[in-house]
Amino acid sequence: MRDFLPEVLAVVGPTATGKTEVGILLAEALGGEIVSADCMAVYRGMDIGTAKPTPEQQQRVRFHLIDVCNPDEPFSVARFQQMALEAIRQIRQRGSLPLVVGGTGLYVKALLDGFHIPPAAADEALRQQLWQEAKREGSAALHARLKEVDPLAASRIHPNDAVRIIRALEVYQLTGRPISEWQRRQPPAEVGRVRRFGLTMPRELLYRRINERVERMIAQGWLDEVRRLLEAGYAPNLPAMRSLGYGELVQVVQGRRDLSEAIALIQRETRRFAKRQLTWFRADKQIEWIDASQGAEETAKQILQRLRSEQEHT
Image 1 (tube, rainbow, N blue to C red):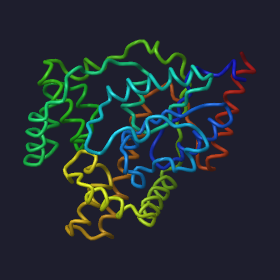
Image 2 (cartoon, rainbow, N blue to C red):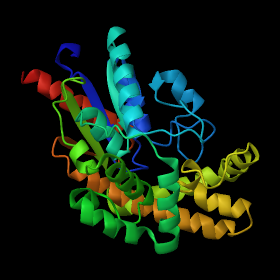
Image 3 (cartoon, helix red, strand yellow):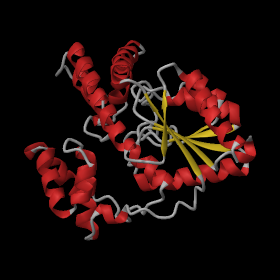
Image 4 (tube, helix red, strand yellow):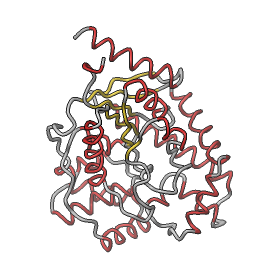
């Protein structure tokens, strides 16, 4: 079957659908290695709250783009794209199949669709100015400003997504061109032929899995993980420390929020995040959707059956 496999296999979709375990099962069955497409898995020391592959999982197959920088280091889409392309090149040299697995839609798109990344370096002074404006006026106000200069980017970015809004405004102010121009699709020659599978399930089940996973993460020591990061000197206003779940638990450590309240808030915001992920991936018509309700083994089996079916009809 290897002769009929795509050059890259991608497994994407909303959080809590079981992408990591499905990716591992496929890598084991097909002789592959996993390139993580998760914008939080890159940070060292942020393990529980990012649902990073466990040490046991990382012993089963080889992972790339995991633990590549510290929480106070900037990590951009451009850096991900460069590192992921290099990982894919090395995987192929070893005669293995690259599997791109993750739920960060912009990372997946940058890698598989090969669009240009803005060359503008981060301007810390400008970024801090925009963050102050976001705190003072709200991210929706910055989103309205973005809509004036780059309506296409604004249509793709949620009004509450301050990180991406600020980056888009930063690119526009530093380069004089909208970020949407930089993100125009280019021929994805560097990755080759890609087969994309998206994992989904009924919303009620997905939301229950999200709620249970947040509670499980807390039980596994997520709050202690946040406390250790703060004690290690990582500032609470770092982008990584403001990310989903971490920001709420920072407030708990600081005594500004009750833990039970934080858990409920994290569950709600994660459900909303999953909805935005699904909207993003649904726009990609190349994705073949798989119902992941029956668990990772059955989901991996369905994907393998589809690959074999294409082999039989080739």
